[in-house]
Image (cartoon, rainbow, N blue to C red; front, side, top):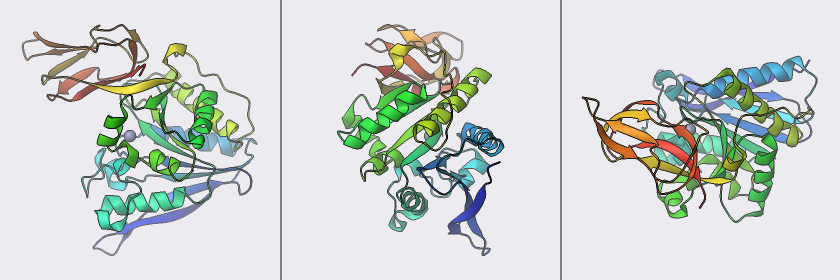
Length: 313
Ligand SMILES: [Zn+2]
């Protein structure tokens, strides 16, 4: 039996005098130290369910070797309101690092997380959700020695990993350098983004997500466990570069591909239809690759992202 301990990390105070604080759940005290952060995006809640399962797995077994801290519920109001951004500020917490009070509430919350995360952890895992998606790991492509270590960790997980971004100019324009893992890598703390499916996923995808996370914790010597199987993802997908795919027209989305599926250049990825069901646009790119996530249905705004793909740079 492994026991958890919990302390609450204060995030901010509000006008009735109450303080919003979130649990930091801790296992173990010695050995390698890993921090899991979840969720910076309030509508990406698969991580909560995955962490419950992980906590049960750790507590009911005898596999703990190092130390694990889990910071849960970072986007407190975003969880309640099912919103990606931090609702009081309207800002994306995962584009707000390293943060600071002078950047408003999102900057303050980011600072609290950042200060915690760079305090002596051997690895920081940032859990996210990617919609109708396969589980995947996103690696920030910096020319830093810590990055090759992070890639080794990702490889051992068995989960598909992709480099962010295929176009580094866009990486900076999208403020991806202000994500938690990116900011941590640049101060020498190994970290990556672990993306989970959040819509329409199978039990198998959830089990793969769990197994991949356990493998990461084994590699990092937090758990002493056998390697768990992660199955069903094409080998060609591993190590590609991530790119978003956009529509030009607003309209009704019909996905023509599934997450994890291969496509050739100029193949239809998504069809955009008008109210009468007529085809307005076939969303394609001039490259071969694999679909990572795709919007199965719903309405797209003009120039909105409808898929995320892995391609060669
Ligand atoms: Zn996210």
